[in-house]
Amino acid sequence: MTISDIRAYQILDSRGEPTVLVRMFSDTGREVTFAAPTGVSKGLGEAVERRDTNNPDSFRGQGVAEAVDLVQNHVAHKFIGYPLGNQTDFDSLLVALDGTPTKERLGSNTVVALSGAYLKLSALELGKEVWQYVSELMQTTPAMPRIFANLFNGGQHAPGLGIQEFMVVPKSSKPLEAITQIYNMYHTIRPIMENLYGASALLVGLEGGMAPIGATTEVVLEALSQLNGKMQNSFDIAVDCAANSLYENGSYNLDGGQYTTQKLLETYASWQAKFNVTSFEDPFAETDPDGMTVFKAPRPFLTVGDDLTVSNRSKIEEFAQAKIVDAVIIKPNQIGTMSETLAAVNAANKAKLKIIVSNRAGETNDDLIVDLAVGLGAMGIKVGAPNRGERVAKYNRLLQIERDYPDIAADSQPLKGASTIPTDGTLKPRRSE
Ligand code: PGA
Ligand code: ZN
Image 1 (tube, rainbow, N blue to C red):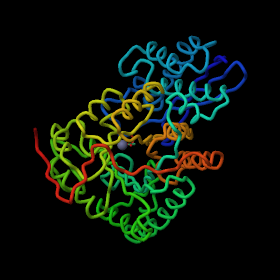
Image 2: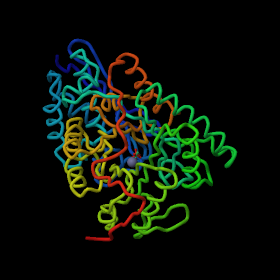
Image 3: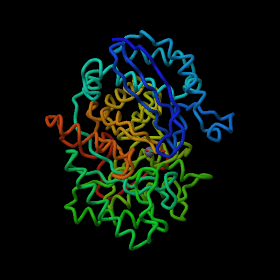
Image 4: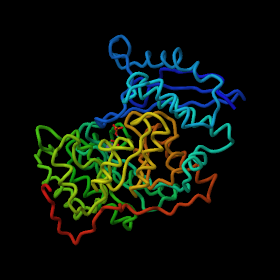
């Protein structure tokens, strides 16, 4: 069981921007593909993609022809004849070949495409589903994740709303049951938005969510919370503030208002109280010096790190120790290799942080992240809205795994983290320590 060939291709992602696809073959004649997704609102600490920035003729500098050439002419031959099933060693070799702390030489896009393809081909050769293989590598119990369905897009993902993602999270983690609920919500709320904001409400953002022009955060949260009430409170409401994009000159701009860090925290608490928003991702900006202290205060909601933690083991350890995050987003291309991704998951598990595996704004039709979430027994998975092929591919993989393996646990973890301090409704933030 060895690698017999590696081929790299320049393809387009869900936004029509170039990305790297790797096709990897084994000596038994099997093959897999994996294509790198891309973030739009990225954390400052993310691994760096390789693009043809000096060549305006290559997709206006966004092309990945150099990256493809690197894989084909400088990397592939090192792995011909390389045994399958040694993820850690394969990834260490990749990291060494790159030789930079940010993966900028080979590019995180080539590294993740190679590492993801190797994981898939190893599983295939061993006769296992990818989720089974992941759970064996990690010694985790597979489980169905709760679906974070992104019904409204804003921020850098769509014009209109300032908050990047408004997600509904069915309390059931049984895929068919959860997806049926998500479908019903999406199709109930669309005509409501169309009535309020006209035809613009029928357009969708990068992750397939509605992007009504003229709507505000509170209108959307009110609509979601009313719908939740009508649906027997069968889901949680979660937001991804992606606050890096709201932060400018020391304050946050949202819906035409300006917020200090403390005022923002109090606003989040009011959304929790009024609309029962239970989970806030990247609630403050990485460059906000007050974020680290204000968000240490007792807070009545789950705080999720994404741009803040970038699937990086040491950042996760740092934020967990500071008791600022209760859960972390896991995206393999933020760090580069699958082994480093799994190391980040290990760090989060050790710190008792919840795991939410996530898609990117620039996606491909690949469904590896679903197997990753199931294999890890992750609390959640972010898959966008039930709209657009690259999002639906993830929904469909969940349905397929459920149908083929009905015995996988679907116990549904609560949206509560280790360091979330329940309050009686009074919030007393500390400014500094
Ligand atoms: P991104 O958005 O892929 O643009 O980073 C997803 C997210 O922030 O969770
Ligand atoms: Zn995010």
